Image (cartoon, rainbow, N blue to C red; front, side):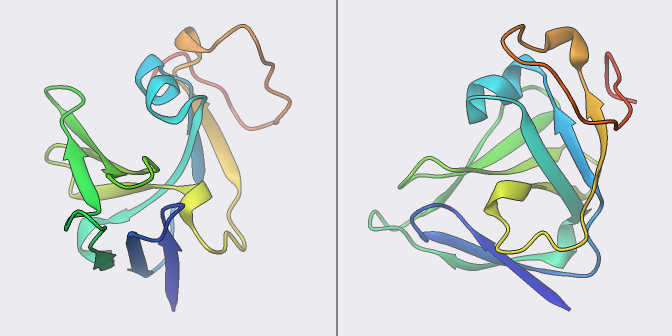
Length: 134
């Protein structure tokens, strides 16, 4: 089964082979700054994600930004969409659920980094909540 996704403008498109992990919503400060709010993601082993288009008008759609010593974030250089997140050495790629063309069957199973959550919203979801990554 192939699942597809893209950035807002279509300069970066991808397909995923295999099952997706259920959704984790991260409330850390980095996710808030890169996405404008909490970041909902699923993930797959890195070798199950294939870029099917990576050519924006400037010749490169996807750019990886080293957001810390241990992680990097992938975004579109054309429209700025936050697409991917990878922790060094984990061999998994987190995928922003909003970039998937279909989220059939995915459920939110946890919220993480609640210590950084903004005070401008509440979490009504019944999924477990953790102060840090667990």
